[in-house]
Length: 124
Image (cartoon, rainbow, N blue to C red; front, side, top):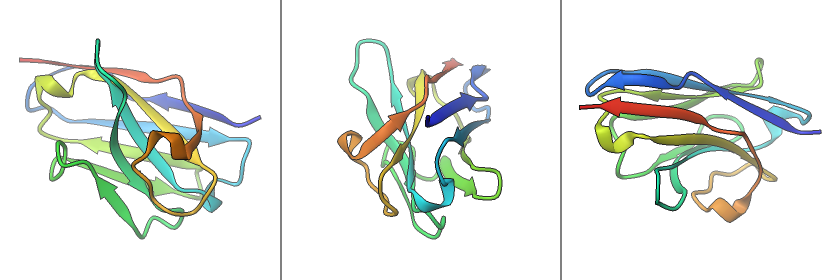
């Protein structure tokens, strides 16, 4: 059974930083690309960042480019999202996901397994 467990969310002020973690079990983590997505109240879930299975390729949404960084540790079966210079508009539930392939993707439909999400709230 594939499980993804996010952690690291919380309540911060604008300009602060947070690092989200997502631990994966039940599959050979190093074989698959990973992604982070977010969903704000009343809005659709949207792409944030993705990383290839080796970690050599990453792709970040324009809205967070230069502030958020995705990385992975294949030895720990964990993917991270470093979030700097947080803004109130970054407030959302953040989800990690894994897809059945090695390459990056920004499409929600390409991802097979999802975590339960972690809340990030940024106050102004």
